[in-house]
Length: 177
Length: 418
Image 1 (cartoon, chains in turn cyan, brown):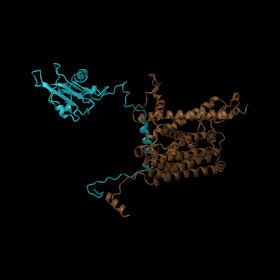
Image 2 (image 1 turned 90 degrees about the horizontal axis):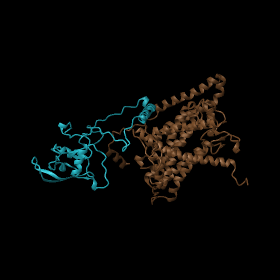
Image 3 (image 1 turned 90 degrees about the vertical axis):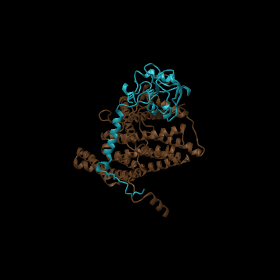
Image 4 (image 1 turned 60 degrees about the vertical axis):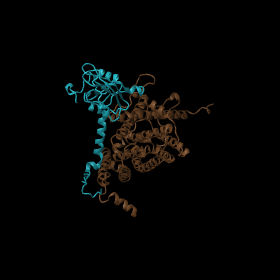
């Protein structure tokens, strides 16, 4: 495309006025900005001592959890929609015949490789029964790769840990889904 | 027996050298911490605040950080690439550091100590490694020019295009800004009538009028030129990280890199010393420090503290400016040096020369008080006039508009034809 192309709209810079050409007003402006930030409250926190404040825990994408239904059973119906939606292929589900009469299948094993996960939240979007959710837990650490593959029990224990502070996100529970 | 022992003068000089180098190195280490703090605070971060006393949980606001930084960089592998010129590569940082440290031989770091008869010192002892050096200012400038060779040598010996470009830029920039720096300095030397930095401070203390008030234009020119000489933002083109990786020290690592970085900080400290000594009154502060000879320890300490506080203030200003201004483009840098700073420096020099030349006639015609006021008002008039003229007359440095009549193909075409 040539500069003379009629499709291009050229916007001219305004010529500098006297104050701008003298440079001093702009310099003082820059200096006051930096000086103001020098004394303004800081946005970072001393992490292990202080916890960062998560803006809205309901929409934060941290560690996963597997929700339980009111009877304490895993909500998941092993439909594989989350595993299909996952762009990082980090969800591994082994489905089995459900021992309960209200559904056909349940996950015999449900593993998430937290090291492969990119925390995009697609699994949460895909889930038809609001079984998988991302919590606001953000410090995810472990000593080995194996330890970072979360199995069903671990994911359910995350639910037990966070269910009081972060209710399930279904609309009835005041969530955003 | 007495021939074998060093004389008192030698001993005093050695003590002063030890105190100065120890103080400077410690100061440079802690200024790195201050710089990191300033950088963090300006960016709304907290900055380094963890390292305290080793092996304990005491943090002391991160005051142990310089020790950790120093140990880390000293223990790093000192890697010499195969393609470098070995001798020059090793000599460059040493040369730079030696020059940066030797500069301080002629720079006073206080007023003086009172006489100490118990040690055989009957006169007051100036806080200056090489007292009575009549060419003090020349010494400072000669050595700061030699420091340029260290940078250039580092860039050349690295045998690396980034390093080489950094060295080239550095030499062009430092040579260009040496001239306005010298012009700003000449005005002060002319007014004080001495090339000795301690005399320049005495001259300001005796009249109580710092040269920043008597020569505002000279101060601004000197300040801007010393930013460029110290290669600080907005003039840090020799090591513009985004363009040149690390500039002249791209190929350096470990202790050699440390020497480069320390010398860079020493340049900034030197610049702060010179600004304070020549324009901001040195150790003088109205009503507190007095202006006569040093008779008591009290006065000596107060003067030392005043000088240190002023220098620290100037260094904080250097660090604040770093985050306030974007880097200049190289053509803007050169145009500022030759088209703005040089004429302004000359205007200042001519004004100061005229005022000093005609001061006796002024005093005779107007009386001492009015003549003093006129001698200050004229430079201020020149300051505002010169600044406005520079703003109006110099070509705008921000003309980044593309040439519309030329497309990329046309440019290529013309290049092929010529």
